[in-house]
Amino acid sequence: MNKQFILFVVAGGTAACVNFFSRMVLSHWLVFSAAIVVAYVLGMITAFVLNRLLVFKQVSHSMRHQVFWFTVVNLAAVLQTLAISLLLVEWLFPRTGFGWHPETVAHAIGVAVPVVTSFVGHKYLTFKSVAG
Image 1 (cartoon, rainbow, N blue to C red):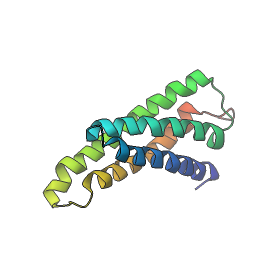
Image 2: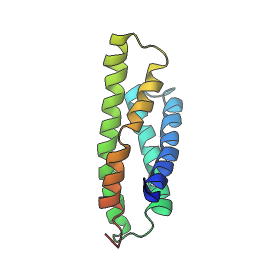
Image 3: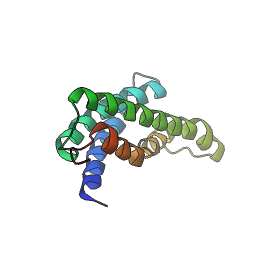
Image 4: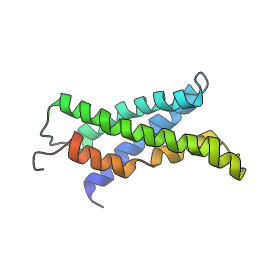
């Protein structure tokens, strides 16, 4: 693993914590699927700032380009997160009898799934470096 990927994982882990724990709080007022989406947006904002400042420092595109591609890459990731989370909590867990905090466990797994696809998308689309 290279240093950039490790920093990406740290930034992403921090953003995932914002995402994960805000979903728990938001679930007091929103249905599960809506809480996932709102929490994901909060995590996405955190991830953009941390990735821009710490991971992808030399960028060849404008901030507008970065925000556009960051949003596109993360829309794909939120769909992955939502699909995995709902598949687990509404289908797999009930069929297997898994009942220990099913929404929390499903969401944690859902958040972890798009790590690699997001790194590739951000490295080559969002924060493409001057060096290529």
